Image (cartoon, rainbow, N blue to C red; front, side, top):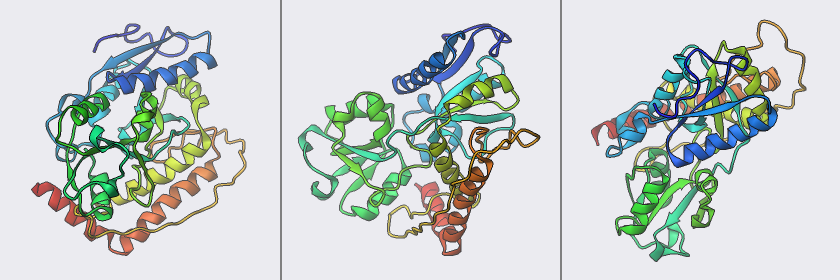
Length: 340
């Protein structure tokens, strides 16, 4: 781990620099820098240092993410550093964090969400087109089973193939070769990188539901580190917190059984919509329940009733889909993926 800040043990707000862990990729650094910039504005008397490191997901680039398995591909090394007191907080893309965090950790802040939609970036020869206008058998690159399964249903005439690497690498593969007609990326990442002009088409939720937590940044901390937890809680965006609690609860309930609610070829799917009210006033909630987590998120400055309602919404929607046959779809999808 390079760029180490203060020595291990000199942690916290009162004991030296506040050390912020991040992945080494350009996008991860941009995202982390944006969070640290806000923290420096909020706490001008504190010193913040960034500790960058590589993760398993950054190193294994020749295998589809779905075949490697673990959700913690992009987070485990960062959490190890957090556990060893080598960093005091870690900035992640929320969609990279599993719905159940390892014991002793919590998401201490969920920042205001950027555009959560998926975006299509086209090969230069296809500029001005949309997915629906591409020739039959055109190859679309994506590292996401979620995207491929949904888009196969919407665009059965297209072919979908794995593409790995950071944003820079994937765009280079698209532009310099003839392997792909287009690739699918998160709009939020492209915007943060300053590449919004590369977006040829934004995919509506009717075309492709975005990933749980997509577009939001999460700050992970040690659950018992009250100084750091209190400090980062100022970053919480209440609307984003409640949306992401609902989404993560939905995912956690489904993943307890298997996975996602689309067959891999897109031919079988279930979709339902439910809503609930989260219009609860903030109350004085001092006491033993201060640090109650909802799907790994600790948000003391967001009303507890609203968080509970958001979590219940996600669980109930997942239960509805399961009652309509989602378990079978997910089981078949897992078997097909294991056989690939």
